[in-house]
Amino acid sequence: MFANGEEAKDTLFYTDKSTQISPQKLVLPTSLILIGSLNICNDWVNHAVRDEMTNLRGNNYFRADDNIQYLPVISYVGLGAIGVKSQHSFKERLVVTATSYLAMGIMVNGVKYAVNEKRPDSSAKNSFPSGHTATAFMGAELVRMEYGNGYGLGMYAIAGGVAFLRLYNDRHWLNDVIAGAGVGILSARIGYWLLPANEKLFKLNKKNSSKLAILPTYDYQNQALGLNLNVQF
Image (tube, rainbow, N blue to C red; front, side):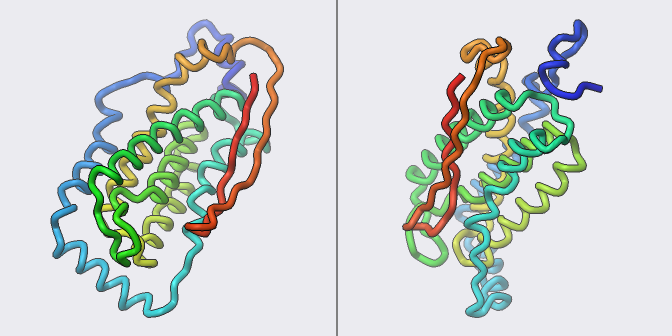
């Protein structure tokens, strides 16, 4: 019905359902986080899945998950810029992305260092929850909420592929990716729930100019690509 978020806000009866908080929206992400948390001590399930992945993989690792984890988030920001109908303006999507990333970073890193779970490959003690999976599912949920279930389904397939590769590459246990998916979905919804407050804080409804800088980054330790967003309103 609306071509973009700014047009929608000029309509008297428009309500932005994505920013409305309801208990029902907490059911899926909190259930995934709870299931993942309960399975931390379930060695039988985790090791059974790991054994299957080891048999499937052999010595043939496939590290694409380090890069494709960002594809859903990039799609969320960029689809509207190439003509796909969006519910919010470009500036609003950037703010939602930043808020969601902040929420996810706090939850993922806080829990990682509190739980101190060893990775299946014994490379570190920060396995729970999976940050790669959280990033991918956060982006997939953002795409679903902004562009609809059709685009969302495609991004969820990519996010599921990232979760699978975290298991395949022996970087995470099953419970890590389950909880990571829940954290990612919850982070995306938090980003939208806080959008009205951020609109007032950053005065997004005013027709002021904005400057955007997108810089690629590379994490040498984890051999992963990333993006650094710098926005001035």
